[in-house]
Length: 81
Image (cartoon, rainbow, N blue to C red; front, side, top):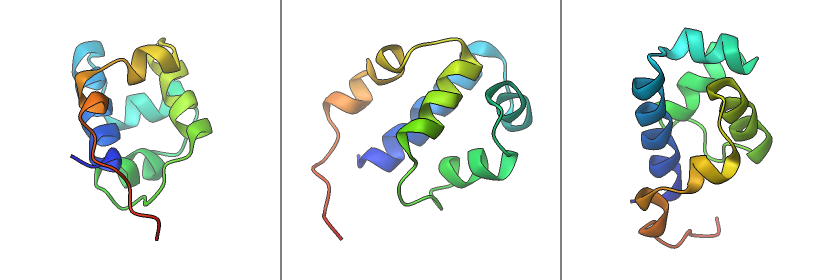
């Protein structure tokens, strides 16, 4: 699994745990719903760390908690495009 897919999957997992949908996550994170959708649907080629941090803040977790998942332990190496 590539990193973009792992980030998307992790956000979906955390939304399910917290009972958030895309719009409620966006509201709590202070980012536009289109930004969250872009990440979740794979349209964002490089979701920035600040955006991921805002999403973490909206979920009430740290970046460490976000990335502390088996999804990221098995992520494939990135191609430098």
